[in-house]
Length: 108
Image 1 (cartoon, rainbow, N blue to C red):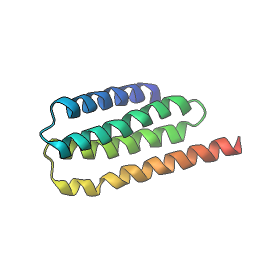
Image 2: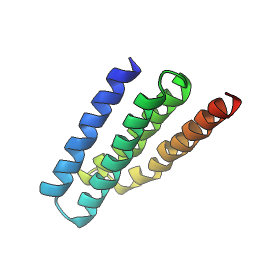
Image 3: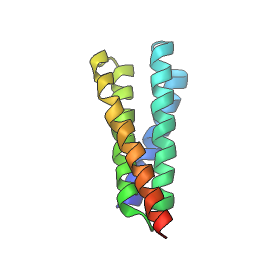
Image 4: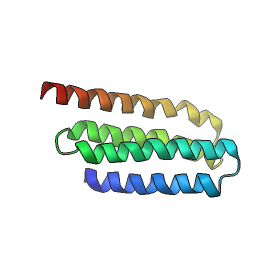
């Protein structure tokens, strides 16, 4: 199931990036879409790469990327700016996922 979610996440990221490049209402909205898309895509690929040996961290990376990107996407589409206060929760989960993966690989 991680692979399916990671593939969907990557597809959403590409769509968000494309919309940011061609349909965003302004430069700030385009930047939110670009940043969200980049983080979501990178972490979808990372989750695919580690899902066999670090399942927990892969899930955390997908959840963190979803929260991080979704809040940026929502603001780009007109949601209230206070939603940006939620974005760091996703970023924190990304950091936790990477550190957890590093711990798993360090323990070997």
